[in-house]
Structure formats: C-alpha cells, structure tokens
Image (cartoon, rainbow, N blue to C red; front, top):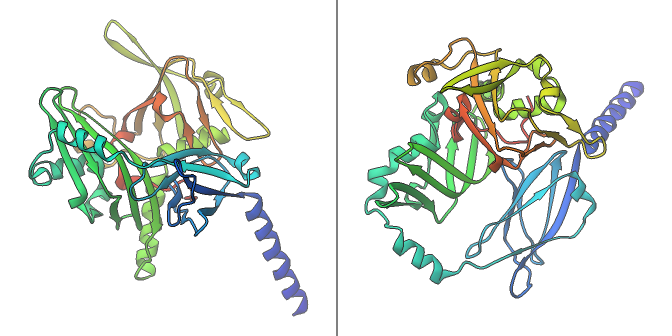
Length: 364
C-alpha cells in the first residue's frame, strides 16, 4: 500500500512538473497614461483564451499561460482598449507596465454625429449583423448575443458602407460549444459594393458548466469537430511540421488569363520557406507564392455549407490564404500567428465565424 501511495505521489509530482514546463507566468501593472496612477479593476486577459483577471488596488495583475504567443488585452471603462503582444520571453520581465489612455469624449461625439447612426438600427440590420458576425453554421443557431441593445449601427450613403460598434463588450452564449464570450468589438464593417464583411475585436472565453454528463460529452464532441480542419489546427500543424499526418495538403494558386490553376506542392515546408528558432520555438514562413490553397481531407464540408455555396467541392474542406507580398507569417507554439493583417482568408474558413471559434488554450 505504501508503495502504491509513493508511486501516486511521484506521478502527481511528475505531471505537475510537466505542466509547469509547458506554462509561463506574466505579471505587470496597468497605469493611467497621463497621471501614471495605477488603475484598480482593469480587465486584463489573453485574447481568444479563457484566461483573464482584474487588477488589484495597486494596478497589478498576474496571468499563467500555456507556452506560445498571445495578444494581451487591457480594458477599463472610459479608457481606450490597449493591446500588447506577449510570448514566453515576457516571462522574464516581472514588471510589464501598460499605460492606457482616456477616451476623448469630444472626438467620440464628432465621430458619432458624422457617421449617420441609423434609428432602429437593430431592427433593420440586427439579423444581418448576426449572420455575418456569429455565422450561418449549425453552431450559430445555438449562439445568442445577450446584450444586442449595446450595438450601434451607422450607414454611410456616400461610401455605401455599414459600420457596427458597441460601447460594451458583447455577451455571447454559445450552447453548441459550451462557452460564454465577452467580445470587445473593435468594429464591424460591410461594404455593399464588394459584399465584403470584416470585423475585429477581442474575445475572452469562459467555460459553461454542463447540466449533465450528456451535455459535457456533446460539447466535447462539438469542440473537436470545430477544431479539426480549423485555422487553429492548421497553424499548429505547420508549427509542428505534421501537416500531412493531420490531414492537410497545400497547393499554390496561380492566375493567368483570368484563369486560376492549383499547383500541388510536394515539399510543404520547403515551399513555405519554413524556419524555426530553436530557442524561442517561433516558426516563420515566407511562401514562394502569395496564394495558398489549404485542403483538409479528413472531413468533408458541412452539408449546410454545401447548400449555401455554389461550385464547392464535396470531398474536402477548401480554404485559400493570401499573404501580402514580401511578408512573413510568424507562428507560436499554441497556433497564435501574426501579423494577421498581412493575410486574407477565403473559402471554408470564412464561413466559420464567431460561433465556431475555439480559445487558443483548447487542446484536443
């Protein structure tokens, strides 16, 4: 019996040690940019994770993160949202100081006055916003924005553009994946000329408590389905150099005389000009071609996607990445990549919106 207890203790210590190796801690202070005084109660979280906290009376915060990179988000009522990119290297800096600026109320009033707020905007554009922000996937039908009244809609006739803002974080309940999101919406725009919708913001996830084992199992199954073949899965597979094993294939898309041709790639990592920093584990890719077709062959497209999309393959999920000319994409251990503004996404991944997003600290 003593031997069994001793073995269990050793196992617990080993598991704890492994967890610590795969994690790091960052700490710092949030200050008013003008007065340099600490701000108590500021929200500090790693974007797209379940990890967040609030500053104490001295403005201090501490977060424990899985190895990799994140956007650190700081929000405080009456202040501009601040962001800072962090990696495992920041664990050595014990005094990260983040200064946040107060919002300029007068400027806000000018912007709002000149941007043509739509009366009854929620009634007129609410459903359209939900479809293009939450999505039109099976999971989206189980997603609810709890505080839609926080949304403000602005339409510019001159630019033929709809813009949506929110003064408060959007509270989103996802009963398909078992998460509650607090989504700080930076902006949402829809260009009616090009029919292109774009949005940006800072989501913080919180796991919901299942009512029973059946719901817990359902959520886990739905999360796995959302993960496999996703952008997060792809980026981790590039990082780990196991694209083929995970079910991915890449091809280069070339254009000539208004005709696009997909060219198969035999050496994925050579074509991506893959390099890895052994000390930081940061991967950099600089593809030989700007347009990359990403095929996920282990899962067919959702039937709903097929019904909503014309001329789509039914055998595998197809997405296309376009990387700005001469730009590299850096990928951290957890699948976080940057600079995200240097990459445009089309195809299957654009169909999957907020309703299908998983936090960076999700592991299958």
